[in-house]
Structures are given as structure tokens and as C-alpha cells.
Amino acid sequence: MNKENNRGQWASNIGFLMAAVGSAVGLGNIWGFPYKMGASGGFAFLIVYLVLVIFVGFATMLGELALGRKTGLGVIGTYKVLSQKFAWVGWLGFLSGFFILSFYSVLGGYTLRYALGFLMELFSEDAGFGGLGSGAFFGSFIINGGQNILFHGIFMALTVLIVMGGISSGIEKFTKVAMPALLVMLVIVIIRSVTLEGASTGLAFMFAPNFSAFQELGFMKVLKTAAGQMFFSLSLGMGCMITYGSYLSKNEDLEKNAMIIPIADTIFALMAGCAVMPAVGAFMYQGVEGISFGAGPGLLFVTLHQVFSVGMGGFIGNLFGFMFYFLVFIAAVTSSISLLEVCTAYFIDRKVQKGEEPNRKKLSTIVGFLIFIIGIPVCLDGLGSGVAGGATIDIPAVVFGMDEVRMAFDCWLDFYDMISEGVFMPLGAILMSIMIGWVLKTGVIKEEIESSGIKMRAYAFWDICFKYLVPIGILFVLIGQIDDFFG
Ligand code: PFF
Image (cartoon, rainbow, N blue to C red; front, side, top):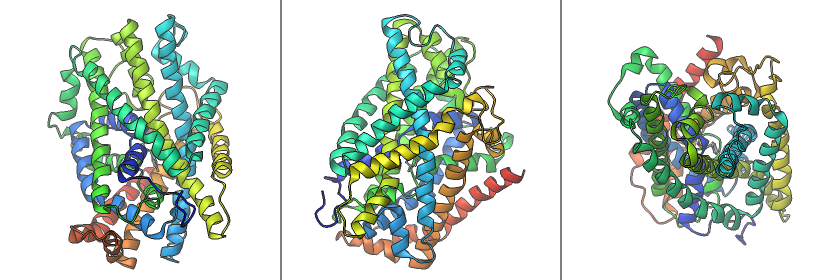
């Protein structure tokens, strides 16, 4: 542990990168990216997404890392120290982390259930999914509140266990093993997927130039979906990278790190697309029922289940099914630990500031337990205990119907997702950018970068991003959000 401040520090830059890329790569990449791409225009979505990463993602990443390393504090402490006017923004980040993790963990529990299901099927037929078809199994699972809570609890307990270990000997150690393993598993699944008969349909959907979605869905809709996806996928706008940056040594090259993380995250998202879409395309081509690119959020738990259990089928189907869902589970854990760390860091910082020795084990357990409790209503969504009391078991559109029914708050998951991903994260990013570009001035980032003895390379670009591109880009997202709300 770092003797100077008792907070801990990454043991190496590569360890930090594994943890940061691990935070970024998660359900957002393997689930969100392919399904949003599928439902929002394929290639057109991809191009908008890439442009956003370059002009909004890189700068926001750099801003977060630099501010965190400068203050050496978590998200709440950082904003408090930097600006009185913006002090409250840190709380947006903290609350986002809290709410996102409460549903993220429930979904992480789902992935564990599916991985175990395929594992059991390997040994005994019908043992894992009770002989039910994809849609029927999913329907029976989401109304089984007890099982949902159990898997949510297991997922959360695992998250706490890793965060308890601390920065270098908990988070860094885990992600240094998990991330390379993830890459290997993903490559294996991609090879299987692209060599299926008819796989090229899926690849063409992703990569063949086609901008018809701009007319069909409207440019603004594609932009808004891509922007929300980008923030979530890069773990930006809620201080996660501020927190991870605060454990980074003063010797490391911030500008380089701020480029590597989004590039790696985007490569993982594209790879996930290449694992999912060709398989979906292949079985659409072969005429397996119930499979389409635009399946929406049901893609991960219904369509892909169908791909493995019916499309591939047999021993191979179960083997790849297990490997795929286990991969998604690991990716979810490397992200959930960063979400828990955002919240835990606040309490640790408070102790350190009071001159007391922080008890990381105790603090992370308490915070993790509270998040577990907050997540329980999400586990019961399928039973119809929505915020408005109106959620039904008309799956998957209602339980996961982020876009169509998000505004109606038909279920807790939508409600938590709406306030965090929909409002707090873009708001947090816009405010951070305005604070850097207009209040503190981009010089504050330059100073932090150059404190490593490394010259800042692209001042003019970052300055334009902080002052104009990031705030204006996100403003469109927020307007779209408000428009949806009243529309
Ligand atoms: N980036 C993660 C994903 O794509 O699944 C989710 C996430 C992690 C969002 C950490 C925000 C965060 F702070």
C-alpha cells in the first residue's frame, strides 16, 4: 500500500491498463454494443460510434485520469478540491456507480446462471435449462425471484471479495489474469462463429457500408444511442476513471493511457460483434427460428441461447455456450469491481482525511451489501413489482425494453438505468468538460501531464474538445433524452 496516503497504488502501468480496460470492457461491449448496433443500423451506428470515441471519448478519458491523478482522490473528493461550484458533481458520479452496480450485478448474475446452465448440460442433458427452449427458459428464469437474488448475491460477493484485496493486490491482480483469459476465450468464440456456414451475412451487416438507418431511424436517434453506449462502455462520466487515475503513479504517461483504453475497448466491442453477429447471421441464413440481428436486448439471453442450444446444438453447442457466457461473466466482474471501487473510495478518502486508518475490508463489504439490497427490486422485476407496479412478464421487451419503455419506468432496471446512464453520466461528463475547458482551463490538464516530465503533445486538440466538442456533443444527447421524456 502507498505509505504516503494509505489509499493504495497500481503496481505498474500495465496493471493499471488491465484494470482500466477491464472496467471498460463488460456487458456494455459484449451485450450492449452488438444489440444496439443490430437495432440501430449496423454500419451507420458503427461510424457514428467511432467518430464519438475520437472527439468525445479520448478527451473525457484524459480529463478524468488527469483530474484523479492530480488530486489523488475519488470522484467526490476530486470535485470538492477542484471547484466549489462543481463540488456537487462528484455526487452524481457516486450515485451513478451505486445504481449502475445494483442492476449490473443482477445481469452479471444472469450470465453466471447461463454459464452454469451450459456447463451442466455438458454432463447431463436438460440438466442446465430443464429442457426448455430459449424464450421459455428465459421467461421462467426472470420470474424466479429467489434464483435471481441468489445469483445477484453471488456476483456481488465476488465483487466485494476482489475489491477488499485492495488496488494492487485485489483489483490489479485479478484483472491481470482475467483480461488475457478473456481475450483468448473471445478469439476462440470468434473463430467458431465466423467459420459457420452463412456467417458472412453477419459480417456484411456490420461492415458493409450502409447508411439507410439515418433515414429510417433518424440521425439524432442513432447519435443518441451511440453516445449513451460510448459513455457506458468507456466507463466515463461518473468518475470511475477519476478514481482509477487517483491510484496512478506520477511517472506514467496520461495522454498515452487515455488513447490506449478507448482503443482497446473499441477493439473488444468490435470483436464481441464479430463473435455474436456472424453466429446470428449464420443461423438466420440456415433458417433457425427466432433469430435476428435486431433482436434488441434479448440478443444476449434469448437469441444467443438459441444460437448455442439449437443452432450449434449438442456437445459443441454446450461447450461454446459455456465458454461464451463464462467470458461475459468475467468481463462483467472486471467492470463491477470498478463500480464498487468508485463508491468505496469515497469512504476510504474520508477516513484518510481524518487521519484514521481506513478499513477497506469493512467499508467495501458495507457498500457492497447496500448495493445488493438496492438491487433486489431489480431481481423481482419479472414478478411485476415495477416502480409503477406495471411490469409484466411479457419478455424480453419489457424487462429489458430500455428504449421503448425506459421513460415509462415500467421496471426498476429501467429506472436505475435511466437516472444513471441516461442522465447522470452525460451530465457528469458535460460538467467535467465545462469545468476543465472554461473554469480551470485546459492548462490544468497540461500541468498534470507534464508533472511526469512528459511534454503534452496535442494541447490544441484537447482544448477544442474540452471547450466545444464534448459539451456540444453531449448537449445533443441530453436534448434527445429530454425529448424522449416529454415526447
Ligand atoms: N464499461 C462497463 C461496460 O461496458 O459494461 C460498464 C461500466 C463500468 C460503466 C464502470 C461505468 C463504470 F464506471
